[in-house]
Length: 162
Image (cartoon, rainbow, N blue to C red):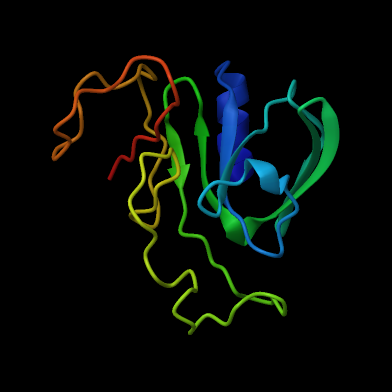
């Protein structure tokens, strides 16, 4: 699914972003990790040697002018979406599998506990969301239960379609 959404984004002229839950299996610049999560631009222009296989996403990217190697297990991907309109797909990260250095899944600090709600584009929710078909224009009305109007500019948000 990651490859399909990535191709849909690039074919449509959008910038694909990857929201990742960071643990000991991920190799990302830790200075950019916030609340155990990082959002990565995985567009052709932002990456070098992007490889998406069934186990992991690997590429090189520049952070602060320094080239870094990025490794993200597929189980840690929280969402892949288009930066311009927030359309994409969200996943429930599966952490703690095959991680000898991480915490066991039955510990109180494990990923089984729901994360605090955040306005980040990768907030967890339902297991999957689908890419809408038809008009790719952003939604103009807020989803039900959203009391605040959408903000113009700033950080993009992920819109979940159930």
